[in-house]
Length: 331
Image (cartoon, rainbow, N blue to C red; front, side, top):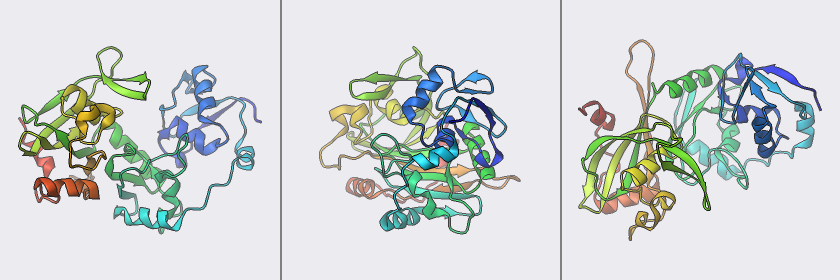
């Protein structure tokens, strides 16, 4: 056990969440104990109280109370299970773009991005299969919900992680989602501007639309195609990044839940004839590039269950249109 220490975030750690930094350097520290240390103020960042999701930057100073040091933690933790060949092959096949700085994946639905209680198989545990020619495995810089598929970015080194994290924070990086929702919105194009807050319930944590304690959340939307009055194909562009923002906005505020989203849409989210899985997909991501060059647009094909739904409804799962342009043309 070490004494109280104040550690400076190293450049190679890049920008990341406080809980991820602890998980990397103090793997024997459980999440429950970490939360208790945060609640009691024993862990601080730059002299101030912090939360698990506090963003660290190189040069930040973290107060660490007596904990197993890195050597002790390595001795205490269980060895990581070997990566299954099938998982290594799956995650390599999910790569849709790669250069010296980033890797973009088409994340399969149902695969958690990170581990947690009772979650042993997750994307973070498969990243060693994506080293390719790099000196280290790539690292996560953002997340998608377990059941959401689509474009997920990885940084291949610390400098890329810092740059991408800054782009996500400043919203310079644009994200576009496709969703199949119940009903047809009116108007067919617009903005949902409704604060969201996390609440605990018997079914666990969920997000609710409320001004009381809520954080501002903004989603732009546009109708691409409708199947009568029953279902709609929407393009969604989040202007903020709240937990479950798109799902809560479409269901709770809009009244048009995403198909397969029982958490927010209840029974209405399961129309007959469709696979009972979430029909929400991170379709594209536009990454700005220096020197006034056109953004790098990364596009992910739909997963099988959404492709089947699109074909059943007569929608084109691979349209030629640039759906980012629909938002640029909006009044």
